[in-house]
Amino acid sequence: MKSGKWVLKDSGYICIITNDDETYYPSAEDIYFAQFRTVLIVNGIKVEKPSDDLSNIKFSKLPMSLKILLRQHVHENSISIQAEIISTHKKEMIKLNTILESGIDYILINDTWHPFVKGIFEEIKNLLIQAGIMTVGKITIKQYLYIRNTASHLLQDEVGTMLLDKNTILPELSEDIPLFVGRLYPYQYQGYRWLKMISEEEAGCILADEMGLGKTAQVIALLAYEKTIRQSVSLVIAPVTLMENWRRELEKFAPQLKVMIHQGTKRTGFYQNLQNYDVVITTYDSVLRDLSMIQMIKWNLVVLDEAQAIKNPSAKRTVAVKQVPRRVSIAVTGTPVENRLTDLWSITDFALPSFLGDLSQFQKKFSDDLDGAKSLEPTVSPIMLRRRVNEVAKDLPQRINIPQVLKMEKNEAIKYEMLRKQIIDEHGKNASLIALIKLRIYCTHPMLYSGKSEDPALFIKYMRMLEIIEEIIANKEKILIFTSFTKMSDILVGDLFNRFGIYCDFIDGRVPISDRQQKIDIYSKIEDSAILVLNPRAAGAGLNITAANHVIHYNLEWNPAIEDQASARSYRRGQTRPVNIYKLFYASTVEEAMNDRLERKRMVSETAIVGIDGSKNDYLDILKAMTLTPI
Image 1 (cartoon, rainbow, N blue to C red):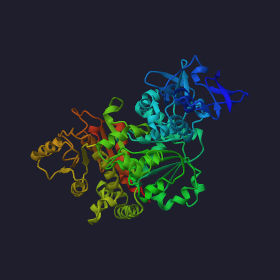
Image 2: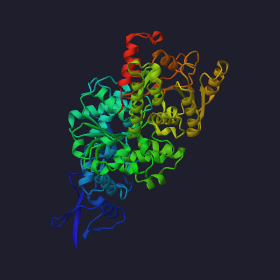
Image 3: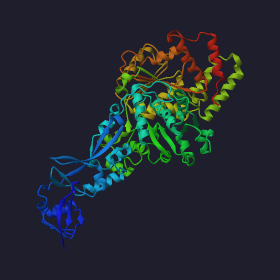
Image 4: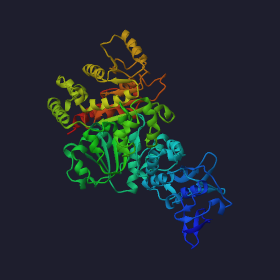
């Protein structure tokens, strides 16, 4: 039998050199058994106790726990990784290369030998290999999130809290955003830089800012920047109600981007046509219908607006959307959790597939209750940007105007056009505001014009209003809805109460003046969400309704004073929160002509003294309203 001698190499590794000059590197278990259990034959080599040959080294029975230290380098917006040896009484660094390249499962610290905890060496090595981490230095957010979610017990994570602090990671810089026209508020700029970082890391995220904080503008800033560094096309998937709004916002903030709407009868059947644009806007249903074609493109960014649309994991639209090839996924929603925690799982599974495991794993790990939500929060927070109005109020104006430009569905547009031509045939150039009332009524809701009783949500404008209300209710806030038409008020009160099960009342000319304040008092005392439907003339002055911080103008007025006085029911002294003012109107209809007039009048005169005065401009506005067509 060969005999050998214990030798300490300059590298810090212990080996056995035999009497015929062969070298053998023993494991920690070999050394431990030879030293403490007097097992003096190692790999067929007869040896003494290690301490007999290595008198300068102390041998400890205490195993060392090996962990991975994760640190954030703020200046580089990157995560760097090191492996660190930790015990209850000592702390020492070991190079990551040693873990990945060697088979050494012990360490010498200040001339004292320590074994690693049994199995920890292989566990860490395998984890790093699975994450694709092969060397010391920068790792991607994807790699960080993988090892954090897979084996948090192996980490000393100094990144997590910093990653959540977007101001720390993304210090505000005074740089222009290429191809972006307009000004972002400071928190929006921070959001853009965060989205930019996510894109550069080829990861995915959820932009979950509260309603009214301008999520669309932040995404468009990223789309504009991406145009300057990549030629591949990006895809925006949104509800049909938001098609026209996205097109106009892109035209406003990034006019140099080539934009195409892929929806309805104008959908192309050739994927090459889509690649001629910078941004393609489409609907969830269009993705479902045209999935095979859409899959022929490796999209740059895929943006889901109102991403709660895929909250049901088994829905066909959800399954289809998650099959779209993409470099980066961005889910945009103000309500990442509406009913169940699985809502968030489904949205996250789009943003960063497999991040939360499969659905069954998720449901086993996170109970659908408050405790489950609390335990889920630190896991999902690194990929979610969520700011609330009260957190960034200092950056916001007191009044946030949110135009909601809508495009009529094909059948709606055909009926509108028939009505427009009928009015022209009847009145010709003598059309007046009275003649236009038919078009205004139709734009408010076809049920008012036809007298038919049907589901009001079949109408595009009503659908968009419901989407807005759902998010407001999710935040437990109050709403004022203004409409000029009594029948519309009745539809709103009845349907919204049945649909949402919350307090809903009205104030118009049918309510005696002496009874109006009592209705407001009841509405204001409700602690949950509530809705008041108001006629802008009956409730447009003298009432103080600061309990509401959301105002929806369901139909527009010719006179900006009437609209602004109505908005001022909530946006007035005593209001402590920014007020969101939503204006719903149809593109290429009488409502767009009215909106253009409102904006023009505001620019040239004080709102309080503007009205219909029979001037030439009023006549031109009427003529313009008669020429616009949604066909």
